Structure formats: C-alpha cells, structure tokens
Amino acid sequence: MEKTTKPFWEDSYKRPGRIDTFGGGQPEKDVVEISGRMNPGLNALDLGCGEGRNALYLASKGFNTTAIDISISGIQKLNDLAGKNNVNIDAFVCDIREYSFNKAFDLIVCSGCLHLIKREEWQQVLKKMKDATATGGYNLVGIFTDVEPEPEDQRGLMVGLFKEGELYTHYQDWEIIETRTFSLEHQHPDGPKHKHSGNNIVARKK
Ligand SMILES: C[S@@+](CC[C@H](N)C(=O)[O-])C[C@H]1O[C@@H](n2cnc3c(N)ncnc32)[C@H](O)[C@@H]1O
Image 1 (tube, rainbow, N blue to C red):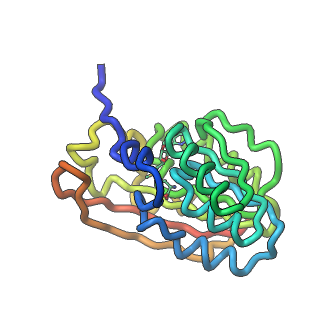
Image 2 (cartoon, rainbow, N blue to C red):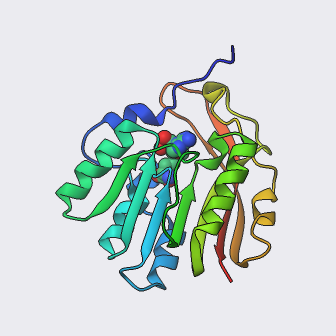
Image 3 (spheres, helix red, strand yellow):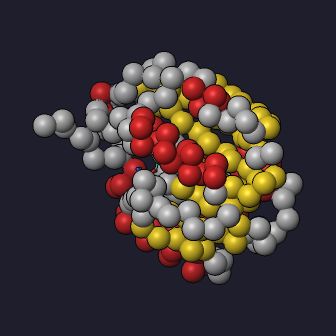
C-alpha cells in the first residue's frame, strides 16, 4: 500500500491563535488586488481554504464568502477566528471533489490544493469551478508543478502535480489576466530543505 505522509500543516492548524501556516497568514496578493476591483456583496468561494487567510480577508471586505477544506482543524480555526473578528463566513469541512457548487460565484480562489488530488480529479474540479463562475467573474488558482519532484518528507501527498503551463491551457476560453511561474525553497519543521515549482493564474470568465 502507498505510504501517505501526514500533511505538515495539520499540526500548525491545531495551534490556537494566529494563522501563520501559509504566507505569514496574509492574504495572497492576487486576492487583494482582484477583490479590490470588485463590489462588496458578491459571492466568493475559497476551495481548500486551510485556516482561512484568504477567506477571512474576503469576508472582511464584504464578500459573501464560502470556504471549504478537508481539514477539521483548519475549518475549526477559521470559524473561531471569524467569530473573534466578527465576520461572517460559511466555512465547513468538505472534500473539494464532493463539493456541489450549488450557486454562482464571482470569485473562486483555489490555492495550493489541486495538486493534492489526482489528475483526473482536479480536471473535474477545475471544470466545476469554471462552470460555477458567473460571467465576468474570476478564478485565482495556484498549483505545484512536477518541474520539482515531490519532497521526500511529503511523500504521497502531491499525487496530482501539474505539468509546467498545463493549468493555463484549462483557461484558454477565458480572459487571462496574469500567469506566473514560480519556484521556492523552504523547510518544514524537522524536515529537509526542499524546492517547489508552480504556476499561478488569474483569469476572468468571458
Ligand atoms: C497548501 S494548503 C493551502 C491552504 C490555503 N489555500 C492557503 O493558501 O493558505 C492546502 C490545503 O488544501 C486542503 N486540501 C487537501 N486536499 C483537499 C481536498 N480533497 N478537499 C478539500 N481540501 C483539501 C488541505 O487540508 C490544506 O488546508
């Protein structure tokens, strides 16, 4: 049987208080920039939201925000912080492969999550995301590619690494606002230094 490593983020999601597991707890630059162009009251969805740095920001800016993650600890922390910060978020535990996308969203964020499910599964999720986006709405997606192999201390987690540039081809029928290729080097607690390669896209539905 294939060995799956416990995701490193689970321990830090369990730590109460600050959300600093990813990006120092700050919302992503694309989220800040694109949401700043939009009217409050629109529908936003954060898929694989973790402890909610992007969802909390969007809710604080008046978006009608839904956030899902498979991690019980992540969603617990997000709900706790939403209460403490007096913002309203419909946050719940859900596998993105099972999510029903039962309304139209003006902004869908999916950051660091799709490569954690298999290729044929993320292809389905991407299609559902696109279908559930309102005309003129945005998708903000960030994924890891296989330019860098799966790190040793995360063996079995990154089952759906993208090919370089592959993400962009899924949005060819949309207006591409920005694409970026990135690489980063870092280390998780008690793990070896390792590199990641990835792609980001900001795209708008025509
Ligand atoms: C690298 S973290 C990124 C978290 C968050 N998007 C951020 O940028 O701060 C990836 C997240 O995807 C979640 N995840 C992994 N597989 C998932 C699935 N099948 N359904 C929902 N969430 C999933 C993990 O629990 C984790 O919180």
